[in-house]
Length: 401
Image 1 (tube, rainbow, N blue to C red):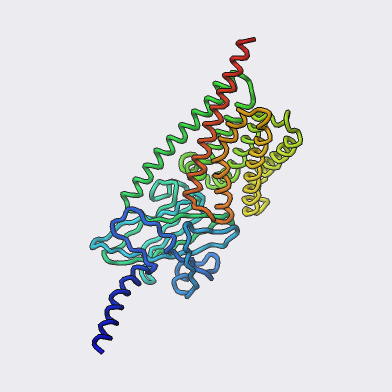
Image 2 (image 1 turned 90 degrees about the vertical axis):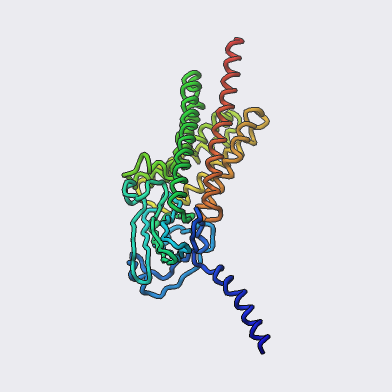
């Protein structure tokens, strides 16, 4: 009997600590960064525009998120999430929850102890940028957990019909400031690089040769750069920080204009009109559809979700069409076309990654952002190098004449 009891005690001693470790409570100590998405729950059955008091009192169904990002599909109603955070330190700890998506329309955070609300904060691009407690392109909620204590965090997201994919992490004060500093440095590098490409394309090439290929490349550089900055919320932070509706419009319009100018550049760079008239006609009219979509967006006469889905489909289609056109042009002008194909391989992966992420939430937001940035900057660099070689050849031919 004693042996049986010893075995039971041994099993309990072995398993109980592991059960605790595998719970959905988020334990924090002195770690700089913790990814918490997989320990967040979505609360179901909440009526639209419900108050936090209603959410706390009602026994609602909760669903484990269990993904790399929180995914809010098109036309979703307001969504509520919750998680529990426990402090293992002997001292109180100041923490920051970051929702790393720059286009959340409205967001409310609540720190709750039982039924008592300790603190609350309203955020989102609905509000001016200067209203943010931490001046960053993402949304950050500061809170404190007492020594050996715990707190329940509730947050409510209103997406206004848009689709959102949101990484969620906890940072210490030191870690979040370091992250913001690194992002600011990277922003300076990206802006400087894009400005250099744009100025070279306009002044060194377009003004010298009066060739619209270079002008369309410069315009593509501008809107491609804005696309990158929009994805990370930097245009809202530095340019449109008191105009949330203008920023939302910019987020939808800029990618379409970037792809339009990229397509116009490709038509001239690859001489598609001269070599493949049928393909040129198809791309030409598809570009007009893209422009009509851009004009319709600010009018708000079409549901937001339909606009985003249409735009995503158009961007993917135009990108792939231009790549296919380049394959057809290989025999006509091999060296020029090879540069074009090489420049666009990474970007196509980026566009597909962004599209699948927007519509299905398949890929990580961080991964898609990295691919898009690397793809756009690599593409612009290779194409500008090719344009420079083309202009050098033109100079040589003119000199020989």
